[in-house]
Length: 422
Image (tube, rainbow, N blue to C red; front, side, top):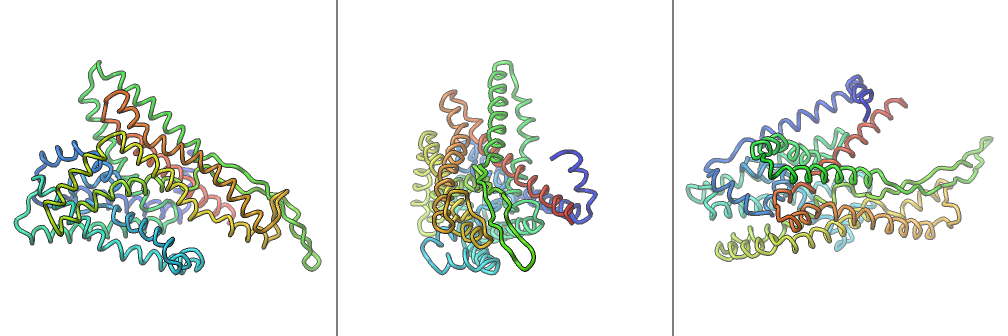
């Protein structure tokens, strides 16, 4: 976005109000993120997170609200888990699929309402399991079961408030609320990371710092390239006579992006990676000893950088295809083209067009999915080669930040274009 467009945003009252509202909501989120629950042992908490890679990922998903055990510590994580479960259920229950795909805005609203309702029990189970785990590690202290239940209620309510803030941001139509909350959490960590890097600087680590900076530049450039990359399929419209006027006879194109899903596959992949840990946490409801054993086993498996990288890569690729299949329907696009007299040169309208679009999309998305997977595990590859583990989160964080920034800029640009036409 150019500086002229940036200033133009604040010249248009309606758009300025939207931007200021989003900024205010993000500020409210960050204020809630620094209010901790009582009974925290900061030293034990820091040691726990420093030795557990999975919970570092959960911290990213929660919007950096977990490391200090704030009242919104779970962030949007329960809502994301709920969304994934509901999306998967559309493959099992035809009624949910019909509601999501065929009933338009009304069906989507009802589907989203079910997702919000499911967030409540998931938030309760996740908060209870996690707080119970921290209590067993002496990172937080509770004065009896009622104190634990009180904090579970507070944390669950915090997750619902964050979900509500995210939906309010989405309603402004200048960015996805969930993605922007995660974005704000990652960006909020930048000053402390820079401070710690400066404090720990020595000539011996200069090469490492330079290597990290070079890798970050390549990751940013690669993410921008893939997000902006698209294949333009030429579309022609047949001439139609209506009354005394002739319509159609023009050419256009259908853009198919290399990365149709944006940052969503990364978010979904991290959520699924955390799912075994989530199951281990909620099993403490039935048996604390079994839950602790299961948590130790999950940590031992997923803290292995090779296993973690393999699962992470596969999940990113799978969810790229999965989310693209949800948001890009070749059959529906083919019907709309045929309805308005459009066709792809050399391809018959109808089923042939749908098959062609499906084949082209599958080939293009493959490269985008593989690239996202490689970028996501790049820090792990660096860790394997160099033995350094402080870059593990870097690739995922950069990927989310750049993707969300690009998507938000595009939505602001579209708002500006719409107002220019008006």
